[in-house]
Image (tube, rainbow, N blue to C red):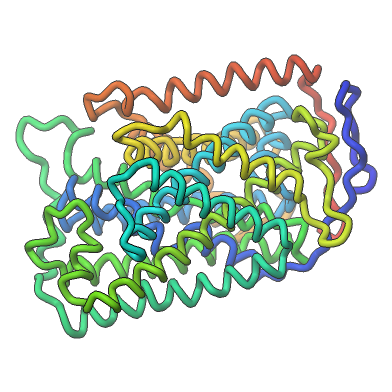
Length: 478
């Protein structure tokens, strides 16, 4: 990494020193687990999925988890060959060139930045329930969300030890707030039949395919298993990344997936009839069975889980930006590529991305902020995932991929790559399909994507970036 190739631009960064390898495989897996977070993964879309398809929404989670595991294995293949900070960005530029990789990382970077806003806003809603705040007061919820986001940035600025501590607290919150409550609900408050899970399998007459309950449920469930790839952003901070990062990616995803399926099943089995049509069926179910003090304690656990997820997102996006800065491919790269001299983390990139995440609250202010953020984030992730997966397929068809080099899971990993290609195309179309009738919600992802593409073209032109086969050498001890 010390001999990183630099570009001749007006903003050529100083050489970025190597990151210290102070994370283990378990630390990387914990980051992926915390990023996805069973609590965030289920509760952010539970009400939307339930409204769309009833209790059969659970099967949509199963379908999405299988598809995401295919993506996770494919990313494991790429990480076992190129274990570098930047993940999607670095893999894509090595598969189809620097320009392709730049736009892949650009899309992924902005997806993560919007996710910072979306998840911190979700945390604010649970904070309202925990501390008796007015959840209908949008300005107040925006302020609380900003505080959550700023706190997460501070944790990352404090260094890896602080991140690990928050990650551990999140695991405790997850076990208590997800698994513990799920077991309690199934043991003492099961009131519904397993047969109710078949509610979304039917195809109502005179209903278009993209409007059927199950297809809608799969669209919403797409949010539930995003962020597992964030483990790859720590590749240059793990001792044996070619071996450990693929395991961390897939392991964290499967772990979160099993917890989400179990917790969702428990809530569906215990949900009283009065909670089915509630705006927040999760809270309504817990309120029906829990004394007020215990309910508030559970809400605090949820806030901890949301906060830890924002910490993980901040950590991931700062590494992406740092990786760009190291290659001299963003304005201000000289500063973005710097590591803190004492804690050896990209603090400048962390603060900058946090500030952007806070600023993003402004353009997303609307009555439908929640649905809009979920839709945009889900679409952004799947489009970002598509870059390296499509790039890998094209590389294989061109014959530029070396099949003799050992990679994660061998032949099975490459079969998963082709299946992941089909899944990512199908789910991206599903997520982006205009079906709400509200132009602001239906077309916002397309408008924002087009705007970001134009901005990206302008930035590349200003920096004098051109397509090149020159690549950043892999870090030592990869």
